[in-house]
Image 1 (cartoon, one colour):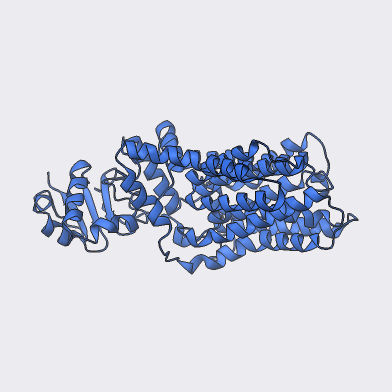
Image 2 (cartoon, one colour):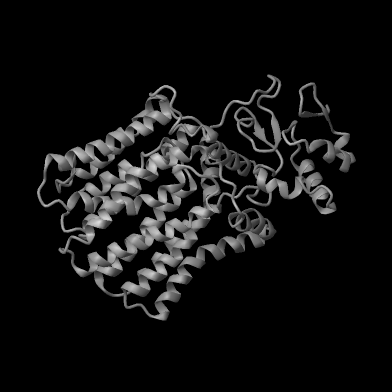
Length: 470
């Protein structure tokens, strides 16, 4: 397999696509479990499709362009998980082909092969949750485009107007996934250390990054949503996170091989003296990518392999060097590649199908959306979940802006504040739920504080569930 992708031929582009689709075969055969974040993204698109504005009318911390993407998918296809998976496959293929194109066409390595794309495709399957259309996956596409622009600058040894293009890509990536904004620092350092850039060039790159951001801010300002944008997106990203580490073993197992081979490839660089200057600079730029990616970890909303897709480009880059660093091709190299691929597939199949009985590693149990034990009458209804939703929305629709519980707490846990009470009442009036599933015992206080809601809602025969009076 390793020797196959070392062949430099045009048909290898098709081989990369086929190779990736074969790796994703389990998704075609039996599907993948629905994840709680994935369900939340579907609900965001669904609410936006009903005419509600993100942040102002839908309280969630998904970035604007990601929300726009989910809205577009919901408008065209509805709440269909396979569509999201198909879109994720398309985005992944674009990344694989572009990453290999940049490495191959710019002669980043002495040996021109299709191995970078093959490793990228393999690493995109380290866990089954990589198969969903996450904001980080979409943002990673534009970060790769920014990397391609930097590579062009380094190859030509002069700073061109492409510095604006590089900044623009990072700005767009930020609008898909806000922590990607840290890559503005990456671009600044790359230009500062490895090019003859001037202050004008840095300002041009900065303007390119800020231009799409300012356009989005202007849109929300014109639609009376700037305060909601700040509260639901900007402020929430920098709040302290309480990570659930029960799946930490799964995370480590998934990342161990890609990062392990990446580190070994990085160490091999110091024993290889056959690189020209621009190749060395590109290696250092990719090392900066890895360092900046580390700083995005505290900004992640939850811990899951899908959030670490940002580490795949440097891992695939240095792993490529590792496999190309052996001067003589041998069966040992081939066995390492095949063994690595087999272990990665084993982790993916274990997460999807549980092929090893009694082993929970890789299944991401804490992120799976499970069918809530709700009465049969609460089906295809508009509901509000007070507390963290886990599966109550699978067969129902969301009502009121309070989709994200951490953000909803801003109002619902502050009912002694008059403004919060007014907000809650206005939101109930604008989009009233048929049922309120109270998992944190807030509804009694809410009904006490808002007599108008007390006239509309009553405790149902089921514990913790309030229903709207007919």
